[in-house]
Length: 57
Image (tube, rainbow, N blue to C red; front, side, top):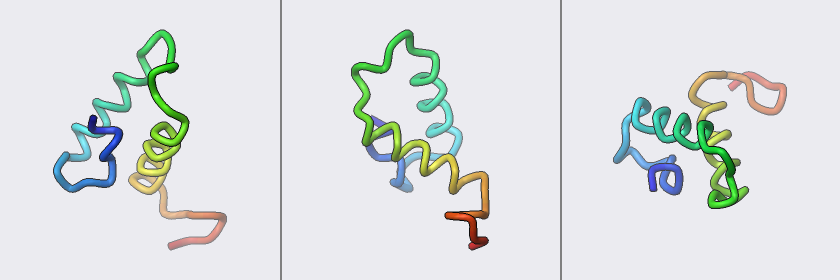
C-alpha cells in the first residue's frame, strides 16, 4: 500500500524505505506491477540524488 502511494506525505521516508526493502526481499515480484516498481525507483532516485536526466536540479 505504501508503494502505491509513495509520493504521499502520509508516510515518512523511513516507512517508504522499509516498504521498498520488503519488496526487494520478496522471492518473486509477480504481485507488484512494473508501474509501482518504477514509481518506487523514481522516488528513491529523487530522495538520494540531485541529478535528473544528466542535469542538476
